[in-house]
Image (cartoon, rainbow, N blue to C red; front, side):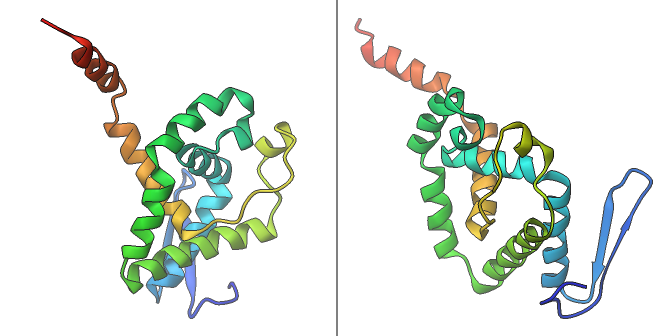
Length: 160
């Protein structure tokens, strides 16, 4: 049981390690989901939020700078912040519970081994906006076709 949970939450894992979370309260279940996601995938989560925010170079170094410029131009971080301010209280509560679960894992466990390889000793706390940012990054990766930009430039430069 974690401090702040209002009831009992149980986690069972199948033969493949896939967890099933059951609890008496949705916010408690979402908290544990955040905890488990961080346990299993925190480096990927951190990489994805930083990538979508145009901050990948903080993790991956100079090679990620061109991607950072591109993603900062897209403004996914600004869009995630704007979305946060427009959400209802219930949705904000779920996102905060998830972030609290992630941060509880971070506060009580060593960082994943990727951080050691990258010679990093800390990670930023998780925020509800980070979850929105990752969602916006996923949508962008599925819908952005940068060749459209090149085609638009070529079409604009075309003269008959």
